[in-house]
Image 1: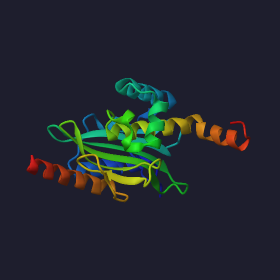
Image 2: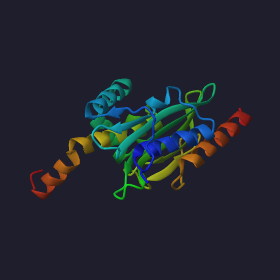
Image 3: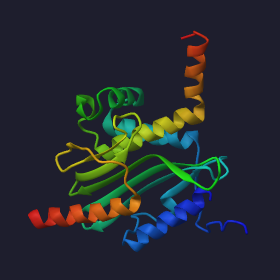
Length: 133
Length: 87
């Protein structure tokens, strides 16, 4: 698998969960020039409703065997009316690398998360926010 | 059986594109990238320097800077300098 096969899977997972990028899909995925499909970035903003966006970034690299794609870093953040109310990220410069952020930006001790679960949790966080406000 | 290849339109980035994006972030938040990165690494979420930078933008900024350093071979240069006791 190269990163474009991975990106195609990403697109399908987003579409299955009603995520459409604010720009076109071609704006969301990029390959590092000259990496022969081994290194790339996913960077996009997806509208969940008016004023609510899920922002996604992944920095990915194909494994040595060519069959695995690793997320070196990732960030999934839900922004509502200009405020980040939920987030999950992997940032190896921090300890622990995998962590989350709550409504008041507090750290949330959570482990690694898949894109599918991040989308599901973001929708749930938005539902909860809308019920309370 | 060959692995199916995606037909998605493809776009590419290089070091210049990363530098341009970093420059845009620097202008938006009035902060030089090395200063940002140092604060991000050292103090993380508590740094007063980063108060105006949303978490997602911090993540993108740090990730793109790391990617640029990798492309430029800065990590290698720093390791080599340490090993050769040049730094």
